[in-house]
Length: 127
Image 1 (cartoon, rainbow, N blue to C red):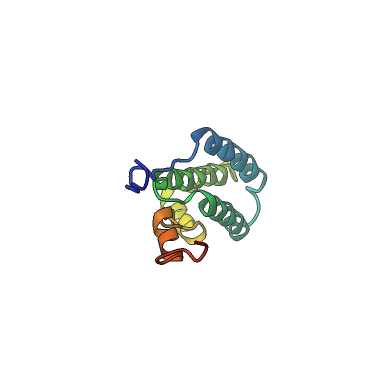
Image 2 (image 1 turned 90 degrees about the horizontal axis):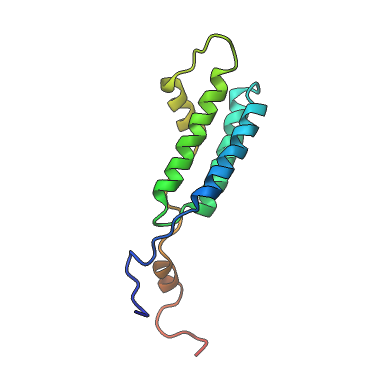
């Protein structure tokens, strides 16, 4: 049906293969940067997650965006635990680090029909 803009038609999902590839890339880079100071690591990982959100945080993809942020946090924790022979990092301080440096996983843009309706009200001037 043309013109029908139900919410189910606008369901968009990220390709899981592409997300896994990005997580493998992030894992390798986190391992390289694991001995840097925590604020430096946090700023870098925050920019990685912000970039992912800027592209993928659309309606219908919130589960995949939240999963990406969770997996980045898990990879960061894994790298921090390997900084010494005695692992003192557990999920309590890790959740504080993630809340401090990683942006929350939220939808950044509205559905396309909402966005386009707001831009042109009434008849188009191109007619």
